[in-house]
Image 1 (cartoon, rainbow, N blue to C red):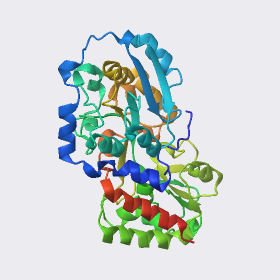
Image 2 (cartoon, one colour):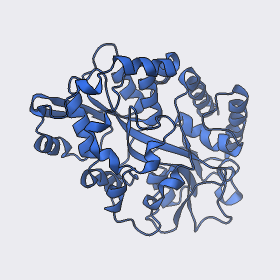
Image 3 (spheres, rainbow, N blue to C red):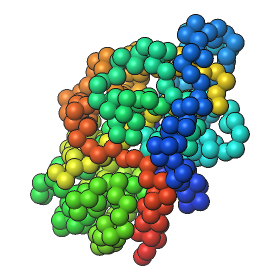
Image 4 (cartoon, one colour):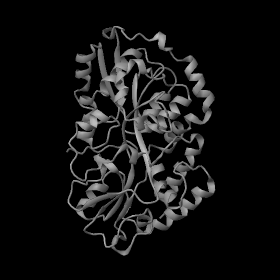
Length: 372
């Protein structure tokens, strides 16, 4: 099974992150309601529209969809054209999508909390379920995501959780807790990596302290900072992309990891969700309100939700997809993290957008990684 490395959550410059994550600060329920009144009504969209008169522009992470997707879509949906634009990070996508005027993007792939921020700013077209019959393929759990219950403005593409990936042959004691990373035993001292991406840097400390991953309380974030600073001298380093390679080589014995990036196909590599709990992350597809090709945009999402198409993501990038018939098409090796059940994933806490409070996590990440 191929493993493609993404920078899907790596932080951009602080200024860009602040712009992206503060989008929701003016939002809340009133913005969501306003978006619904100004977006196209269902009656304005034509289920039998002539898609040959429409084109599609999509922004997505590199390698996150099949290279031949544009050709397949043009053949299947008969759209005039389909172009793919790439973004390296959520922040980069947000910069595109929140710029004044029409970005020209019809469909964007962004993580759940960013979809929430876009919707609260009134930038997303509501999802018209009657134009996406393949929504029926989603697991029931995929319709109950806290940032968008009922998939009102986003459709989940991939989902997973975060935990500890470790070498069982090097572990001298059981690995069960986030404190195993934060206060590593002697066998793992200086052989541990943690992430620098803002919300995931904070996650182990917040969960170890019994706090919500979405806390915006200054005192709780301060206590998490103390724990992270105390852990720093015992780390090999911070690593968001190559921790799996370090683990395989033995340079690292234990790493914080997204489930799909833990190389459990390797002998002696194991993954555990710590007893204090973890997150549920989701990457989504959204339709921009400014799109002039809304019927084609809905048709594209419907096409991606076809089991033959959607199963590609699980088979090729090792991320679970929230599509029951698609997952049934994937051969899941024994012990593979692709076997995690939706109900288990929902035990994790969904990361949501925190508006202006998100800058607290930007500052935390900067301060932790900058201090010697």
